[in-house]
Length: 187
Length: 137
Image 1 (tube, rainbow over the protein chains, first blue to last red):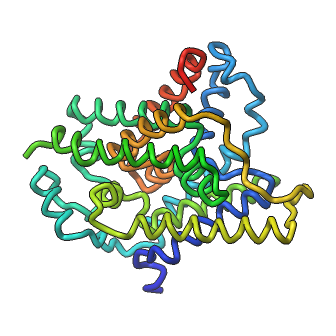
Image 2 (image 1 turned 90 degrees about the horizontal axis):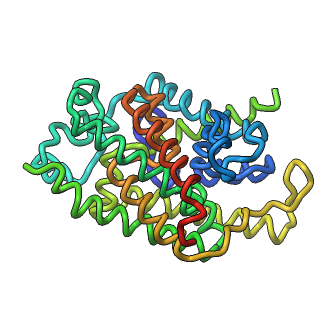
């Protein structure tokens, strides 16, 4: 059971993610998580404001079902398939984050300083979460895909456009992590 | 019942991403600091396995359940949309430590504040829909 309860190694996880893509293609669908955001927008009435959302969202119910499944999967994995092993981060990463004011890097999946209920009493935290969400929602639709659609599916099928998108993901990610996060979380 | 298989795929996906720590904010931070191979190993082996699968399905003419050739969907043409949109997403990915899949999965693990992120992401998607005609692609 330890094999299941401990964190899974990358060389097992990567192929399992590819299996998710393969099974969705076999079902005649695609592996694209950000599309669900567009579908939800359409379902709650965004089609009244923009033609971009004028499509039969009910055809995309399978995608929303995956979203519900993913939420349940997250619950199952933490409740029944984990032994609360801390994430085995690089000691240099831990030191750096501690200097930025993060108390227990790796002890939880997300930093309490940004996501705990107590941290939500800070306007700064709420603004960060909103900005992050806006960037993810806007950027994925502009680039027409996220990690699943471009990095996994697009690169697996050797598409140039996905390579450009993934280069963009890294430009943005490197700027945020290396230059902006240190300004937001100053020691 | 026709949705059951998608529910199961979603559950499976959620479990893998939690167990692989791909939903960890810290792992994403570490990746963009080039301080660990973990995330590169996950993404790299996922692409390699996916590539192998798509090459085999092309050569063997594997069919999906509705009888069509299995292949990945083709992306739209363009350059600006991919580089600029990709960069904007990358900024958000590194700030939140989660791309769209993990946003939902983390909600399931009990990170309820992710609701704020998801609502903001819906709003971001909506804003793109409003501005689409005015943006360069």
